[in-house]
Image (cartoon, rainbow, N blue to C red):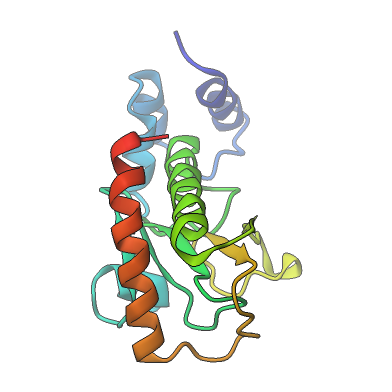
Length: 182
């Protein structure tokens, strides 16, 4: 059985509106759509997030899965502000496969729980800006996990010492939530 997302992409492809390569239709019909679409979105050397994924730029990484990575925002709104990023270069919500977006939001949930447990967050904002007019500044699909109730940082550059301490606390807390998978 083909699910709704795949069915709608087949319809878009047949109408000539699908953003993926023509060969992707074969993969869609074989239920390997996510694999094909991700393979066609390799890392972009001019993208800061892609360079972080390749470890060519420094970042305080707090979690990593096969398809995602999470690190502290360099210019945090509040202490613990984390960015969850696809390891494939998709620009935004409009071109990322649903399965990958789902993995990103599940990781964001685990990070929010860790922020509550170790940073004393009293709430959290989960934000994904999509497109320049919505405030997206880095055109690589990502989700912000911004804790409330932690000290405001007002987008000041995260210093190395603070970043290291916060990242370690969150990594330790995430060990527990990663085991639970929910």
